[in-house]
Amino acid sequence: MRTAHLAVEVSGFGRHPEAWRQAGVPREALLTPAHHIATAQLAAQSGADFLALPDSFGPGSGLDAVAIAARVAPVVPGIGLVPTVTTTHTEPFHTSKAIATLDLVSSGRAGWEPAVSRTAQEAAQFGRKPAAEPAELWREAAETIEVVVALWDSWEDGAVIRDVATGRYVDREKLHYVDFTGEFFSVKGPSITPRSPQAHPLTVLREEPDSLAVAARWADVVRIEAPDPAAAHAARERIRAAVADAGRDPDTVAVLLDVEILLAADPNAARRELDELGELAPRTLRVVGGPDALVEVIAEQAVDGVTAIPLTLPGGLRVLADEVAPRLLAAGLRTPADPAATLRERFGLPRPANAFTGV
Image (tube, rainbow, N blue to C red):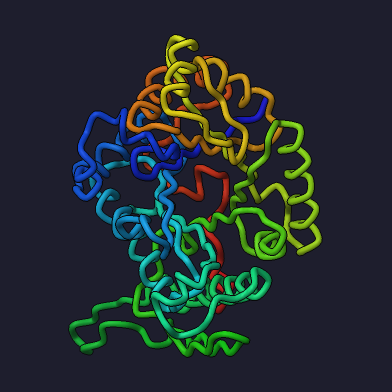
């Protein structure tokens, strides 16, 4: 039996739009650091490998996910932090700098989830270009990821030397120009941020028809939506085949199934809570009931793990931490994580070699 990965996605008071009625805290709390720190601490107590923080340029998206992750990182140890970064209206140089900074302030626990902005409303926020079709958006996302990774490599390890005698702060021989010219960007480089602890923070991508080739080339983790474990397993096989076709080892890419959860110690209480919230069509597999119901899904091992998405917060995280996590350990589905491990190490991935030097 292989160890299953576990991630948690949180936003607002939970995925259900009526969750705010049961949260027990004022909406203004969402704007405070205390709220986000407490949420991350609960996610860390669940033993999750990383906390996913959604973001967009659409209405109601709230605070900046990268900034939240950077605020949380120094005070919540252990757990990885994976903010969403939209690539459609964001310069790759800025993205590279922000995620490398997150990796530095978290001591190697950063990741990022590149996403695209599809709507005319989001395009109008910037006024630089109209909304584009998904295929074009994902070509742009692929260029962004390529540039971001190149910028991460543009500083070698040990480039900062601070030699007082000669007055040299950096060894310029260890800095490299990216010199990238593509369909959407031209970037000279090098970065202005030193190489970070993981070198390449974890890249997480969602599977959709136009993103599959991008995920096959760049993803360390692929998130999928599926109505049941059988469909999830079929998606995993499809992704692994695409990764192999791209010339990479499929065993270096983990596939995680999104699972909406509403759990309670008493399964009937969970179902009553959903009834009170009101009907909401699931976007992926949904588990409503006792803690064992989610453990059973993970135990099927149709994929490499799950991303649990509570319909309500903070209650959904408390059940995950207090009830589900101990059951996963007892069943041998999870092992206690090394608190000093980087996020890449939690996924069994090595620190990448520098593309400019090979080391």
